[in-house]
Image (cartoon, rainbow, N blue to C red; front, side, top):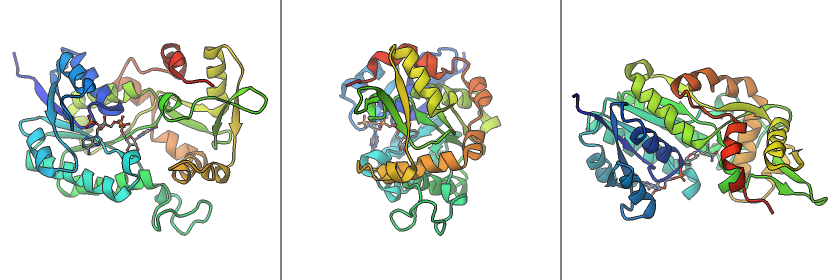
Amino acid sequence: MAEKKIIAVVGATGAQGGGLVRAIVGDVKSGFTARALTRNANSDKAKQLAQRGAEVVAADVDDAESLKKAFAGAYGAFCVTFFWEHFSPEKEFTQAKAMAEAAKHTGLKHVIWSTFEDPRKWVPLGDNRMPTLMGKHKVPHFEGKSEADQVFRELGVPTTFLLTSFYWENMIYFGMGPKKGPDGTLAITLPMGDKKLPGVATEDIGKCALGIFKKGREFIGKTVGVAGEHLTGTQMAAALAKALGQEVRYNDVPPEVYRGFGFPGAEDLGNMFQFKRDFEHVYCGARNLEVARALNPSLQTFDAWLAQNKDRIPLE
Ligand SMILES: NC(=O)c1ccc[n+]([C@@H]2O[C@H](COP(=O)([O-])OP(=O)(O)OC[C@H]3O[C@@H](n4cnc5c(N)ncnc54)[C@H](OP(=O)(O)O)[C@@H]3O)[C@@H](O)[C@H]2O)c1
């Protein structure tokens, strides 16, 4: 029997990487095994991955040597950065560069880099429809990632550029679920107007990534966007209402109001949603549902995700 190919997974105890590790260990015929990278191999999450059959290896994306060791002997790697831990596009770029260099150094055959498009292609810095942030960004948490694409290209790393979508889990972990308004009715607040927001179950990002590794060469050098469904705020509210058995409204606020909410990252997210709203065709067009479903036939719709997860959404 042919030896299985090792996929080194960065962020293995997190959302995207965790989904990929579970997808690999859950698909014994895939031809791949998972090497889960973590800063703490003794954490409960790391131990759970080991119990499921992953090889757990210590690595830190801030430590280039640890990445080289962790990538050594692998066929491929899944690379992701963690903007919301530090809010620095420069740090994301540096971490992505370290991963690209480690991939080059160890001669990996296929890397998936979890990135985003650069909104400044459509909204240049001089365009005042949204404020410039940090002096040179419109959507900082997209642009550090996007700038790093070039490093993978210049080093000649065989890379698939993966464009992800809004996690529906943001309603569980990121405070974006329905909240009660002054009249006691639940509402989701998004500055999307009547435009569609591509969304996805995080577990499906990992399954799509496994689909990309299985296809191999066909996807090297390509950019692939994944989403489970493209839905308007009104459609998301209706799906939530049906799942939760109570009224949920869509509170459509202007992006400038969203930017002023004051939580860390509100301006970045306000600009992000405005980009998705104002360039709906570009953003949805880059996340073709049929492509995602071909990579991952069990891709969930929002209704399907809600059926499994509605009780995990914190309601006041
Ligand atoms: N929220 C959304 O809707 C959304 C949508 C698309 C894309 N994104 C992007 O997703 C990215 C984050 O990915 P995620 O959601 O999968 O992350 P996550 O769930 O927050 O998990 C991150 C994991 O990475 C590990 N990690 C953190 N810092 C590390 C470091 N220095 N070296 C090695 N490992 C480290 C941590 O594991 P250990 O503690 O075990 O090391 C942690 O479990 C962000 O950059 C964000 O922009 C978010």
